[in-house]
Image (cartoon, rainbow, N blue to C red):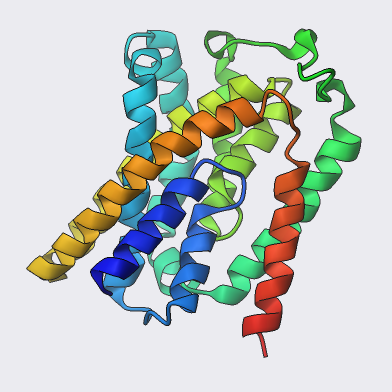
Length: 266
């Protein structure tokens, strides 16, 4: 991997981390387009630079997370299912799922279909009306219950499958529980902090000793790039959800899956 590869992947990560289109899936597909080999370092790179994007959320939302004890406890509770499943299945995920183009494309395709069906038929009560959501479901972050937080965490754990999208899983989970778009999107942002911090920490503990100094340099560049781009992406996404549903992302997922099936699957 070169510095240019690192920058490209950092940009892709920063743009896609918080959108319901799977940043991991896009990193895997981009690496495929760049003809990058499936080395241990490259797989670790795809995990670790996600924390760079997540730090953008920490900069923007640190007061909501650390100055509100209730929100902090609910985020911590929601993190538990992913922590248990991720730790248990770490070797399987990294050895067999990360880097699998087929898994990513099927996840993108099926996930896109689910998003469209969900928006069209399952959740009429949260349809946008003149750019605003139904006020009956307008629950603030602090009003999320512990039960809702745990269930959202269970939804997030599905995203250990590359291509599912952590953001999509938590958002759909939250919407189905009655939360409005802005509330669940912000909770999803906050939940990403411990999730990716733990994933990065675990991967570094297991693999950092095998990285060369040049690889650490490449990793740092991708990390910083993802952080800077993600700040812009977060602000854009929050504006987008006030006027639009997620159907556009569902259509995009289906289109990108079909395109890459044509390109890669023989």
